[in-house]
Length: 363
Image (cartoon, rainbow, N blue to C red):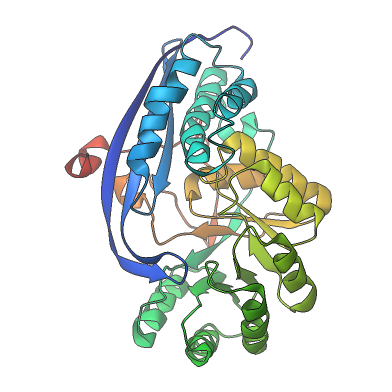
């Protein structure tokens, strides 16, 4: 986009989407997902973005957008996506630097990148300098409360879809239960598929070391979020002492957090989520940090957007196909073929939400 494109309007919508009851060790029971849609209008075009939560905080994100961030965008040049990200980030630096602000900026940033793609007539992966490719996908459940038979039934569904990898939750109070569940999943999937495990920050670093060693015989492809994201030294210790790589990213809300993990060699897999990380702009910076350090990359949720973003990374090993799938509310859900996904080829991010399907859940 070379011509100036003044932003004329910013609009938001709020929805509360029901989920099949599920849960994990860090967040407990999860029964709903909040979806905040954003439209940014400029030059006769409308870029679409969104943020999500796991049931709480969505109204605060919507208010931040409407009351504090949208006024900073009106009249500004939509083509200066990176500059607008900095403008929003710095304007709320005192109360932000992550958290809810990251989610609110993300929704707008996603819409602005979509607007850039629409204006240039290019799909998002091209706009960000990526090359289209088929990226391996893995099936991911939020399944810690599931009894073993239901867990295995879920994994069988992943196998039927052709996923080359699956992920299950760990973090039950009794470590023997984790071991039995992970062992059963490994027996089911065999040795030819990858098995990821996710603790959702349930343990201290010491506990994670003990629990990780007990799970090593089942050859996890990675251990995700073993402890709280603030404990970077703890993650670095786990990365040194456990046989499996450590994966982090979904709970990192600024580029500077990613930078510290990379510098301290505290992770082997960097996972991006353009909503929780603060937008496409922030996630791209995280991917560049990972690329420069020679680290593998993957994604959290945001399946459709991440298919574009991982095409701009040097070593994208997996895209997560998450239990919170938005498929039911999209006009054209993402397709999985031979266990892989590709980015959409239409201009922009390719996300088209079905308002009629969302309508019953509007708040």
